[in-house]
Length: 331
Ligand SMILES: *[C@@H]1O[C@H](CO)[C@@H](O)[C@H](O)[C@H]1NC(C)=O
Ligand SMILES: *[C@@H]1O[C@H](CO)[C@@H](O)[C@H](O)[C@H]1NC(C)=O
Ligand SMILES: *[C@@H]1O[C@H](CO)[C@@H](O)[C@H](O)[C@H]1NC(C)=O
Ligand SMILES: *[C@@H]1O[C@H](CO)[C@@H](O)[C@H](O)[C@H]1NC(C)=O
Image (cartoon, rainbow, N blue to C red; front, side, top):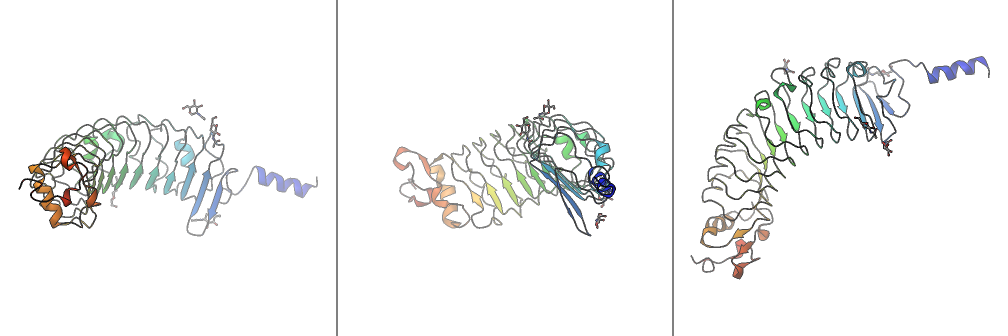
């Protein structure tokens, strides 16, 4: 081998300019405005070396990465977005984000995370925090030091049995909260009160059976509320009063037999197809009158209105509530 060739080989293998090299199993997209590194579905078990020092977005997904350290991340101090989907992370060190002062978006979906240390998210100016599909059973208020500017928090697909009420005290800027597919059985009155900026709340796929009348009374900015796939049987009549911006409300796939008169009175802002009441065991006796009249008056607001069907009495089983006549209801 000639000397120049040897030098070239050496250069390729070991020493590249830290701003321009790319980890062996990854792809790097370099433009004057940002540097993006993507390691997708490759046999990594350790954090890759040689990540360009000015990387602003790092994605490591579908690998067996099982640990990450503060030191590794601080080699890319300009990092703004960190996506670590579908890896094998079971914990995070408390100082992980200390060396990345611009980091605003962190996604850790589909890992094995459970308990996280105090202040783990306190070091970076986070706006988006995605912790979907992990094993988290407890969320501590001290994940953040003081108030947080976080606007989007996704804790869906975890093992929460209670709401992280102490953490909510620090999240006045939160706009989008996803708690779907956990094991929540109730929402303590007042729990959601600190979330004054909340616009989207997803509680789908929990075990909620009742809700306190004041549950959403401080969440005046709510536009989308997802309560589907729970065990709701009755709802207090004023539950949705005072939500002037509500566009979408899903109550499908619950155990609702009747709508308490008054419940739908203040849903003026609901958009067309915005209210989902399907897949509930509606009882079509005299007490269905309130729902029946509401549907007649607002036929476009209900999603698949013809699919809001009676489950009893037998004589009306499978009939759409809207199609009933006054005499069938004994009115
Ligand atoms: C990062 O470094 C590379 C290589 O030196 C350069 O081409 C790119 O413009 C830099 N990007 C930023 C955002 O500074
Ligand atoms: C991760 O490890 C498992 C088990 O050792 C293996 O089957 C799988 O192919 C690895 N994944 C990747 C992306 O290398
Ligand atoms: C996942 O991480 C655990 C340790 O947390 C380790 O024992 C296991 O071997 C890792 N699995 C793979 C496939 O790398
Ligand atoms: C929240 O944002 C404000 C204004 O951008 C900033 O001054 C403050 O330091 C931020 N707080 C945190 C905890 O990131």
